[in-house]
Image (cartoon, rainbow, N blue to C red; front, side, top):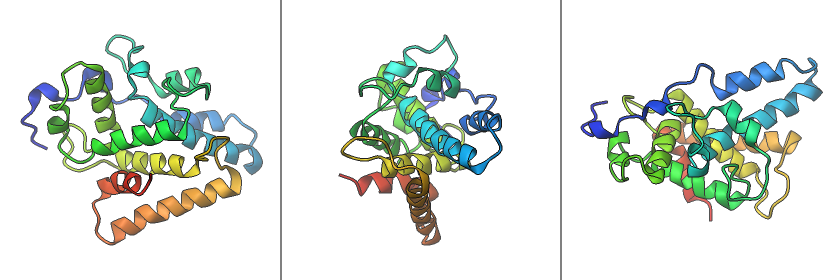
Length: 209
């Protein structure tokens, strides 16, 4: 992708990690007893935390604690995640998750450089936009949206679908799996009818109030 906005290329602190959040979590799961009853709930939990990381990692509260030129990792995120009151980087409430998902969706609508050009460089809003563009959008230097970004969009939509809007624990187990399958089917259907692969989160959040 030719990017005329050279002043707005991907920040150095958004370099690719050695291991993806999914790879890190799978290494943790493999230390558990090799039984479906043990590993299945762990994998569901990991999927929710990975989606929260993708949405919450862009928050100024999270990125302000970064280490120099290094982005805070998924391991950093889960070590600080408590599921506590909304307002922190955890994005504990349904509404806060939805608000962040809409910010992430906005980053998918145009070229990465064009999107970042709308923010003051190095401002908290710019850092947030850079994160969401990298996690969910075409990103700097990619001709088309990447497979990981498509997965992140599905994960964020699934996380929202599994949350109880009135509060309380999310849907897990068989119900959680059924919801995840239904959201994945929606994404696949949109691809089958020719909708752009990178438009799913934007479409999904537009259906929510």
